[in-house]
Length: 304
Image 1 (cartoon, rainbow, N blue to C red):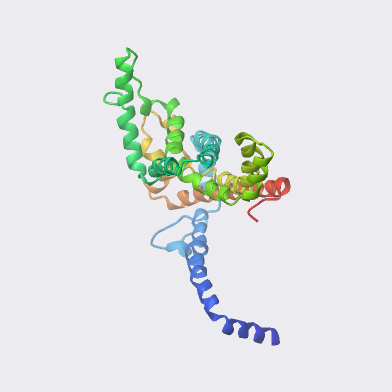
Image 2: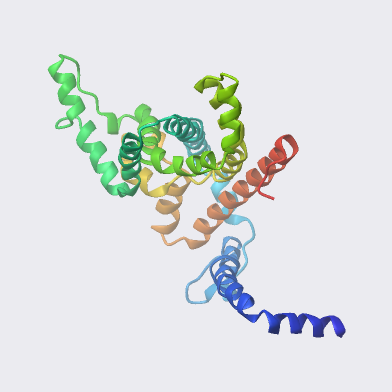
């Protein structure tokens, strides 16, 4: 009883802090924990009239339907390959860019480069895909007009399945490199300046400073972001893939998100869409926990 009394006294004494915590806690519970109840739809034959509680249980029917479907392995392969391609290319480039930009001594040039490279991040996905169509279109595209002027055959870049993954990933690199580098630049700015002074006294070159000071200084940040990136490896962006997708490149562009939209949501099969979404979330959770455990064991740096 005394413990409850002392706890209540502490709350009354610091009620302002508890009030500040209350707002984000309510938002967290409302938008992250309450919707978890909806995951039960994956195990039910959902009926909009009966609601979640009134819909009958059907167990793993829609999981079985998804796993045994004719397109399961194809869309799973496309999802994983695009994600891995994006991770292998899109993850290190912002790091390299931040390290290079950190070595720039001209403040004017540095700000100009930052402005130019940050700007694409704020362009909407629809505009980016439209720009790609204008650049790579088979008839009016600038690239194909250049190829024709050089006497080469025109290429339907947006219609060839073999080009889809590269177009998706490299356009994302162009759009996101500058903005993604911000966090690495912030980490670089937090490195102890005395380390650079000691390296300069020892006669270390810029390259050696990068290898022995910059990279070790941002390794914890790199590991945390890598864990988060691998934890979302099954969550390829739906909007951009859907906008770039057409009947000619579907073999390479059909991913889990677009398949769920077409088979689940357009056909109003909410239970199927929920089942696939839950499968995605479970795989991402397993990857996140596993990579976090490995990172904690190897480098002593982890999310928790």
